[in-house]
Image 1 (tube, one colour):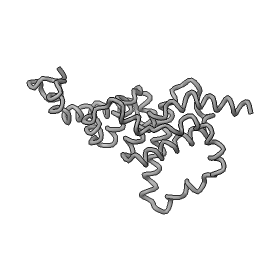
Image 2: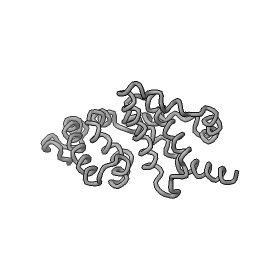
Image 3: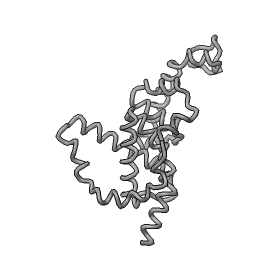
Image 4: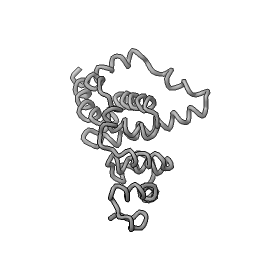
Length: 199
């Protein structure tokens, strides 16, 4: 019982504070609030069940993002192969989920979608990020919005650090081009600056 209490406390202290960040990442992946909420819930249930695989004191955010991304990729694969859609869901034990649900009591009334959109996040920038191809969007979101290091991004997406840097460079250049006129209008750059050059 003491081990369970210690485990729950560790999960509560290290994982639960990252729920909003995981939701934001899930929303960028799924692009639908309902799917992002489901993905976030599934990520935290999976993380709780596998908490012994997490090394306490390391960065929980990148570990959770990895779980979230893997779940998303699996969902996408299942949607392409209809015969496997219900496979994973049929393995869940509802009684186990209900026993574990008490760990989520402190955040069950949170509104991550509302909190995300109430933050000062420029809608034009978000629209431009949404328009990036998936691999570039993923790198930009993890690095620039969620503040993960190159190494952490590489671990989440399962690619070499050099590939991550390349995707970030290309993704940021695409954003600069997409946001040039907006940057001029808001005074971030001068009208005479070449495209993509900050003032």
